[in-house]
Length: 170
Image (tube, rainbow, N blue to C red):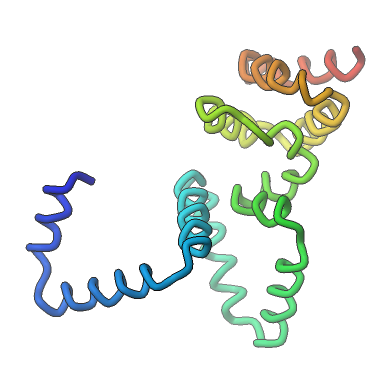
């Protein structure tokens, strides 16, 4: 959003809306830098989910909201007990979140131009293909993972399963 668009939005607000916006902005600015960055990261991850995943997660959130406080606290404690890698992985949605720890060697240090295409490719793969790719990523030395990512992205989607089988028996 450009500066002039932001200015137009502010001018279109009622005095009450501007006051509420100012309060929300002050509350945001009062947060520690790390907390703001984590929230930005979670929001960006949310925007990258497809519409079906967002609908599914909203429904799940509504279910969790109805849980007893003790059960919600237990789930929060279970999530907080995960390491940073696992917690970060769940930002990618249920399917990739479940497989993230195993795929982390392939997803770590992805160049920015490859990040979204790689995530799209992973989302297009079925669970078994992601399991096979995780095995392949574990076997691949760190210095060769960029080549593996590039090769994966160059394979047509219809040929991914065959490509994985060939790579696993090499």
